[in-house]
Image (tube, one colour):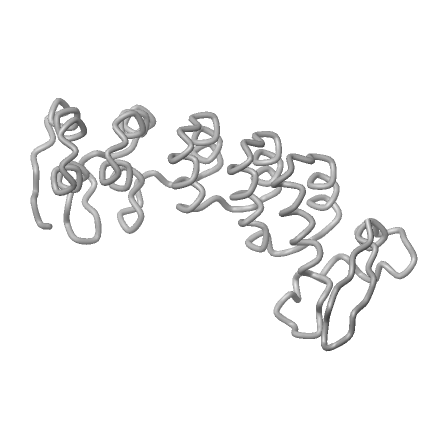
Length: 198
């Protein structure tokens, strides 16, 4: 696939597939190319990131697998690809990215929660999304949104309903402050006592 790329006032026609094939002439040195992505002269890195994001968005597993295996890079570069794959509902691509060391984060949880995709939430938790970090407590976010089904899901998956956030509030406090009485009632059945520090 060829595309035009504008860099330093020069427009170049670029063939993605040849570039991504490490055996092709003129491919350069794929290993390390993205490791140096902060170098202003390294303009090929964004191509790889863009291609992975596009494939993740469309659900095209093969190029994602190929690129993740061929390119040694900081996996943090590909976190947006996970977001696109979640948005598109592409479980195989999410697993491929996470299997290859791309970290999952709170934004991924937010999107999967909004989509009410328990399969995606399962994957994120399986690959290390911490459900009990006070700074970005998943249960607190779900409680604040009034997402009772997600609150139940997280508790069943081991989320600590006695965990305080950075302000010292429990999830039940956040739910009450946002007037989500169904969430408050559910958490109350777990013998949670409000700490009310809002």
